[in-house]
Length: 264
Image (tube, rainbow, N blue to C red; front, top):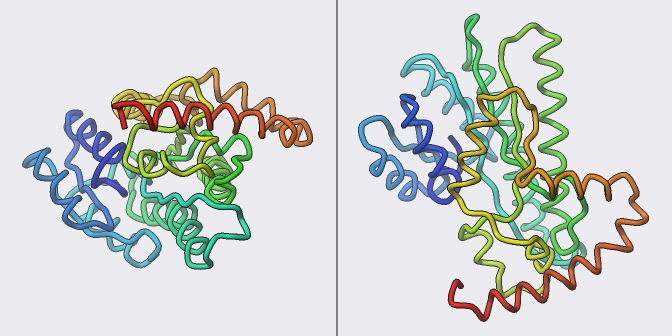
């Protein structure tokens, strides 16, 4: 499990352990990973993992396989930076793409290499609602998440064609009440995040993540109605470009209200 140190990653780790799986909570922040493992108890151990490094991901897969059959791999690690595309520092662009997209590619490849035998395994990739529609202020982030979704579906097709019994699933949640989102509440460029009716809780998204991981649907948008609505905009890019500023203005009103509330 990558990005397991806090938020959604930690919550998914807890649920996997409750299902009887031995969990490796991996995170770039080794101390955060250790806290997750300690909270879970004997069923978990911690690992420091930089998903930008393919060899590190392969080592992580080998480590998991050495403990027993690798049944599940979750690619959750991600970073977010908000800015107009041309104002991003080069280092931020590299970080976002390398972590959010290449990290999923490296992790998935490592998982497939470590999942052996006729029993196969399951891979869950955490995408985003921005996988379905452009997100002004989050263009680079959104591009990586659209890439995650496209990669995941294509990967499932390749595995099926090869007769490999590994299932790939993706979730596309709206903004979740995590540190990543809270860090952007004061940022006007992130206003589109607040254009939804409400911010999701970690627990509800983690529950849906597990349902999706063990279910038949390849992709789950959370909430489903919002995913369906935004996919309609994807069918008409010119219309989307015209409507997105209105969504951003709605988000800006909500952002200011929540910024002033006790919740934040």
